[in-house]
Image (cartoon, rainbow over all chains, first blue to last red):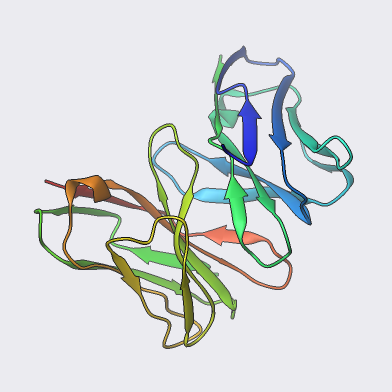
Length: 109
Length: 111
């Protein structure tokens, strides 16, 4: 059983669409991270959340601690947003992370 | 800023060979870790270190060794490579802010 579940696994969108990727977790956490991985490339951190909502450009991340759920939204999606988005949780602020399997996003022009 | 530097990027090994994946960070992070990424699975923790001289096993440690002689470096050694170790390997580091920094990844094929 994976402590972190993401949905959907795969997502195809037309350029300009609003996109939502979901992450649910089953353990208590101190923080949740959203990561982005481009094909053939490394992994970069997009957000770290412990409560509420954060926004960076067209990306918005929200978290509901009571419901153990987080969402990553992309507004006005663009082909360059095509990547795998990974949710990770940090349970005790001890830098030990649990990862979801990722959501593969393809944005078509 | 170099961040996390991981080498080599690509490697083909024969079964039974040994090799070392190098990882270095220049952010003075205490916590470093190695993950493997396989299709359909999330990143899985191989070994981690909370500081120089301290290492511990993660979820999938068998077949791998690590050491942490300095804060900067955290090499991963495959002692006798097996086809099951064909994977993409990522080194990561994090510090007080808990932001995770990853290396570029190492694609390893064992034939």
